[in-house]
Image (tube, rainbow, N blue to C red):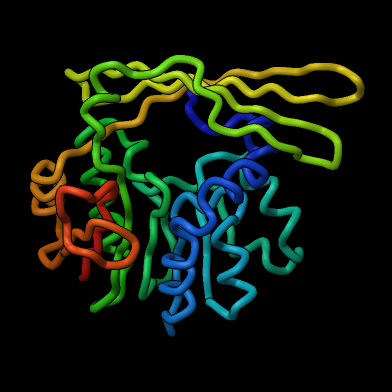
Length: 250
């Protein structure tokens, strides 16, 4: 099944996630990108929510994504001579003729890899594309056990205007599969356009991780130097943490 972002979801991505995620992770990743003196790669670059600010701030940044619809939105933002910086590739087998000092996979990219084999391929492919001393940063959410058991139905997680006077709403339902360690998510988008009410639906699974499972996964890869933090401020993991922020160094 194709889990890549469909056209209507890519279309409204910026409207939704600039509202939901800016102020959560963007400063953290953009700061890391801008401070890096060498080349940077953003995996899951999407519509360029993080990429564009880093590029405009002088980062020598490249981006890959598996969704052509998301990249089409980003291409519209980029000058044509900068399109070469962005390509349709996957974290498991992307290829570049040069290496990077920083590779980032923000906003749960690793959770889209459902199988152990693909997770290891991704980590090792990233390792191979880093310069010595280079760093890989990715994140995943810490599972909420109550939500994993119950899931939730028809939760409106965004409602706002995508253009003046034109509204869009996103409705989310989840159902867990505890054996496969996936959260099966159903999205429904509803929006107003040309005097009509429109809707589109999309489903995808996310693979969730627990701490020691994540550590074992990294330790099976080529990476030997890593640290897991509990938030985007660099706080140690604790009972109040909601995110795994993983730093792996080559």
